Structure formats: C-alpha cells, structure tokens
Length: 290
Image (cartoon, rainbow, N blue to C red; front, side, top):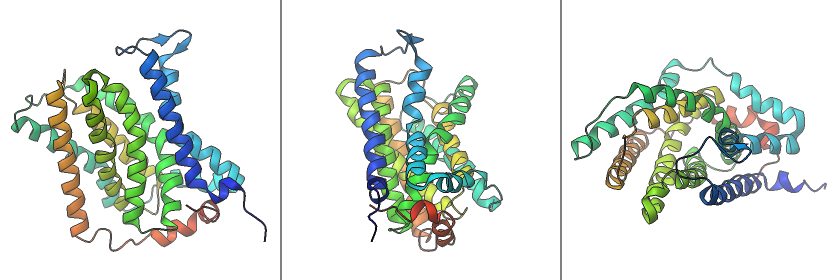
C-alpha cells in the first residue's frame, strides 16, 4: 500500500502549525518594531504590505496546501465553492443579519450598562466596509474552505465549529494583541475575549449557516464581511480599558446567548447538506486527517 505524503496525512496539523506559527512570529516582530500609531511604513516596507502578509495568510496557506496535496483538481474544488450563490435566501439573509444584530445589540447594551453613549459614526462605516472586502476572502479559503470540510470528515458540525473557532480565535488573538497593547498586561484578557471567546461563538453560528448553504464560500465571505464591517462600525471611540473590557464581555455574552438559542432550537441536530459538502469536495478531503 502506497504511503500518503506527509502533508496529505497531516493536512490540518500542517495548516494550523504554519498559519498560527507565522502570525505569532509576525506579532512578536510587529510588537517590537511597529510603533503603536501605525506609521505609513516601516523603513522600505509599506504598512499595507505588512498587514496583507499577516491577514492574508489563512487563505494563502490553504491554497498552497491544497495545491500541494491535491493539485489542480483540489484547487478547482476549493475555488468552485466561491461561486455558489444560488442558496436559500433565508440563510443568505442570516449571514447578513446575524453580525449586524449581534454587534448592534451589544453596542447599545453596553451603553445601558454604564458604557459610553452609543454614537453612530458614518466615517467608520467606510473603514469597516473596506476592511470587510478583503478580510473575508483573505481568511475564508482557510477557515471554511480548507479547515471546515476536513473537520466534517471526522466530526459532527458542532465539534467542527468549536475546533475551527478555537483555531480562528487563537489566530486573531495575536492580531488583537498588537492592536490592544496600550492596555498593558490587560491586553491578554481583552485579546482573549475578542479572539477565541468571541470568534468561537461566531464560528458556531457560521457553521450553522455553512451546513445549510452546501459549504458556499461566497456566503461565508459575506458573513465574514459583516463581522469585520460591524466590528469597526460599532466600535467605541477613544475607548478606555474599562470601556473595552465592558464591551468585550457584553458582546461575548450576546454571541453565546445566540449560540445557545440555535443549539436549543436543534440547529445542530439536523445538518441537511453535510453529506453533500463532504462529497462535493471529495478530492480535497479524501487524503485529509487529523
């Protein structure tokens, strides 16, 4: 019996090791050399390029590993899911509305609990829109394009959602670590809340949608776009440490209440399109394992 190549036998291990290993090294270097005010460039390297190298790695690693393991047929299968748009309208609406509702409720609730009065800043909408346009494609080929279908090969959607969310959240922990370093040692807690805790909750809700849109990456990119856009649009201006902690705690509570409702209503008991997800990208997951 022919032995499978290393990356085929350990595709997920390789993915998480490379992706999280890279962002951790990047974070250490950025924390050491990039001033907190984020200048236009660092020496001869533009800041936009450094951000691109960091944020784009989940999808870059996924595409490279897919090409290495499955070649052209694997890449064709991976990219084909970005063209899936004829999905149930109600689930497309869910992908759009869930991030908006979660962030809006949390934003106004933190004001009720003693935080800054909610202020709608249209200037942040443009920033959120721009960030959302590239954050989705730059991440979702990895998390929901490469990782999720391989986890579904071995686990239930509930477990796959948790594992994907933890990996996604740990990866974001390092990015948040850079952006929250002004809080000193408290940045570990704020980064943990805004990373693993919050994004694992979002991963649960995204997986609920994912299993009902036949693994459509287009819908997942749309969902991710909503998360990024709303995170900036509903951000607190000039937030203090107390403001940030309060808001993070509130939004984590809101997202996990939403997850509890989906689970309680049987959202993970019936996964109608999981078999089709597994079979439709069979070439991509046949050689994958934990």
